[in-house]
Length: 147
Length: 113
Image (tube, rainbow over all chains, first blue to last red; front, side, top):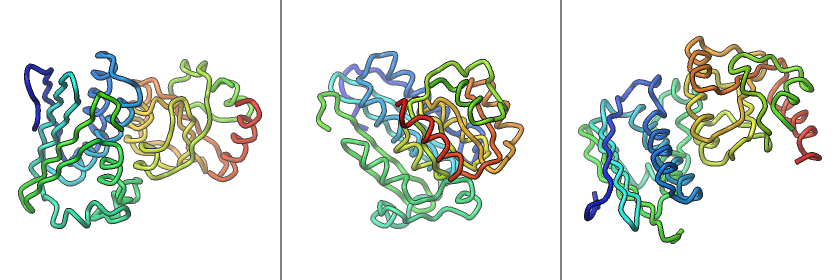
């Protein structure tokens, strides 16, 4: 996490493998960004990335901590989960690649668009993962209109 | 055109949030892939889908869509309806297929966009 200085910090917990609560944290993050008055175009991108990261947690992890950090120059969101992890990050970043179950696919998930959607919408994305342990996504959006 | 006018013109059945039909609909978006809807739909669009599970409500709320049309007379899960009422997201139902209702909605909205 690159939260610097005296920025605003808010932590959330996401329960994995529970579809009935999916989307709550990304909606909260969006509401906070709206309240603070972040530019709508940046909020749209942050909301898309947050939703995809939250759904990955719901589908593939047991539990996660989400940390929203706001500084004067950037929004940084870290999604740190305990879960099955990603065996091959390069493959997981490819559009269309997915390890989703048939059940997830029937629900309209698992199209292999999650991580590519996050990457496309973020200004910066760092992923680290230990198979069998968990994954950490660090997503940054710059407020100076870089993207 | 408001959602209420669309409901009347296309004979849609209102399944939830019947008090929230006065907003103007900007356009439509047809897709059953949630990642696609999250990435590409726009505010105030009316979403056409066959998905009936709870997560459609979260997607509609996050993207500020004007409502959801379920095709082929599909019936939403009980918890989907409950959540849609809580979040004030109109869920509508039609006997038409996705192709047919998309065509009808497009014809309605295209000239008056």
